Length: 301
Image (cartoon, rainbow, N blue to C red; front, side, top):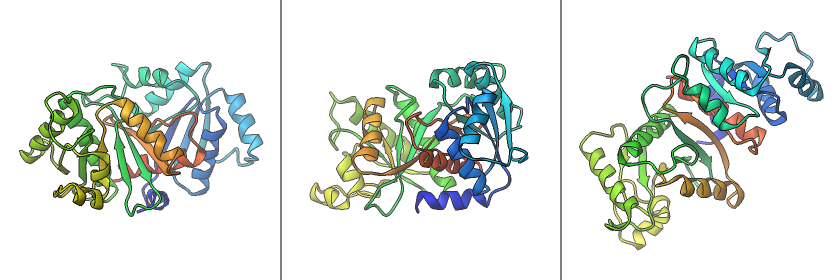
């Protein structure tokens, strides 16, 4: 499966509307226009209307009367975030997308007790990579939301990622809790957590996937590396989902895949009432488009 196939899959779904907070950003609008061209979704753009229309003009977008694109003025980024979140809460939109505003601003609206999108579950970031040389998509979680999750939080993070993988057609995804070594060390918390998560999976506490760890990154994704170390399991060398122990590990892995391996990526925040496209302001329009497709595919079933 390639990320491009997610776009094809998303276009086959029923009409979905994406609410974009602070849409006055060139890369965001480029992704929106590309999505409109592909009939991916409808869009409500919240933000500075004059700036948004200026960018649309620069992009030579002529169809201002297109019913699939609506621009709503907001005086500030915080108001744009509130309006976009309320649109999802009121079911006027099915996906929330972050535009040109701070992550903390949009999350404040997402976590609002009156109209926010929390479900009681852990919110977690799931990135889906198309890595050159690999025959499958690689999921990395959590590289952006949870700083140093405990075992219970990691279990929920796995559930979020496994649900997303399943929605893309990956049945019983293989999950590798990553650590520096592939044996349990009492002075290395990541290995202890990995062993506990494996046991929880075996006992049915983390259903819908196969968890095995601790595993090193090499023997999680390479069958050759696993064989060299004598590791034999359903996950070793064939992991679909890489659960990182901390946000620092996830962040470095995320950026390494992009800048060193030239991987393509789409990402969403899972665990809320609706998927949230929370890409970096430095991400390309292509990455934002893949993230939109990923979000839409995750609500298709």
